[in-house]
Length: 181
Image 1 (cartoon, one colour):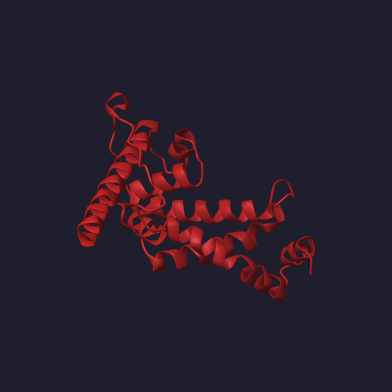
Image 2: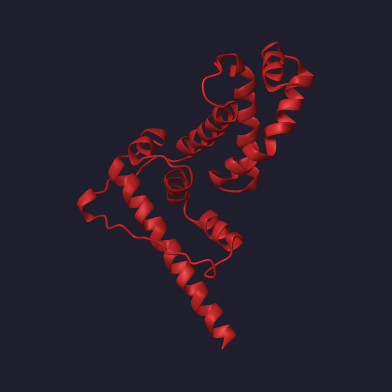
């Protein structure tokens, strides 16, 4: 069945089409939910909630842009909505005090699995901003609107996330280098 037909059948609340759509996109959306969730269980809940939204609003997809992109946007927004509900107060940050920290990675520095692990270990607000900015290409203005923080706080959280990652990578490399001696 073509994607267009699958979407039409989902609009008509066809359970088989919904099941097929779920099977086709669940793993991609789950990995996305996991990026924006505290843990595996919360990611599962976010995926479930995202698919409820998808099935309830699928008629709103208007064939502009990719369908997968539309699904991803719903998964990200669902995860961020849960985060906004769980978090109350944000730090107000003076943008003049933010310094940019870069994390230089050579292929031999760390494995991708280790990098993903330490990103997942970041405090929630740092992880969210890091993922949105670095991995998904959102601007600080967009991030501030998505998770209800100021642009300065978004920049600060990104700088702090990068600093934590840089420190962990340097510690990892120091440990690795001492083992190889």
